[in-house]
Image 1 (cartoon, rainbow, N blue to C red):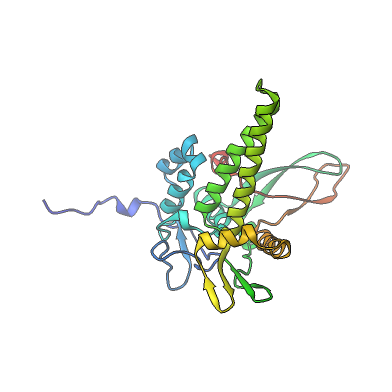
Image 2: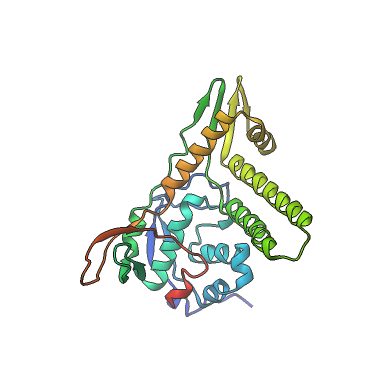
Length: 282
């Protein structure tokens, strides 16, 4: 039988807003993003299936819930595992706005009087203030030049999962009934894993190293270099990567206490907890 068009298609969800990516579409592997000519991505509201997916604990923990929701609400992104970290906050806020509107309830304790303040936060302003670090800038040490790239969501999520698992071990050991020697062995092992993970994450933000006329892009060679380079080069890589990450992070909110006897201004961090950023909106 010939396939017929669904007469209800005109009632399907439509794009609610359009966004430009902080990365401007850079750092996406081929096939993972279809960037329109105007470089603005349409953002659709979440469906009921998206909301159910986002409430699945296992899917939230392993990152697949976030990936599925991004691909559903922003169809131009074909593989959200490859989203650069610098774009993630923009995508989450855009989906939140498209699904529930630009107003978001936000609570904060005043550091001057400890009054619990409630505000109506305009997420459009938060979205407008997101900036990307300049990953085109390299650093040089003698004959070695190091080039950078942002971590993908897949890389960052894998690092977070490993860190969470190792941190659970560290938190549980002091109160365990294990012999002291076994505690020390497991603590040493956990710290060693955290060190290896830190090295791996740091080498992951390096896209290329140019040295003595040779260009090195192999991840295993770059990671070996990070593990064995001198302290000065290592600190330069770490500091530069930290600056790039911090430049892309959400800026603190400037608020005014609404306590009747205070009324003082203060800054407070605004971070996106992916476990409840959408759940609390419904």
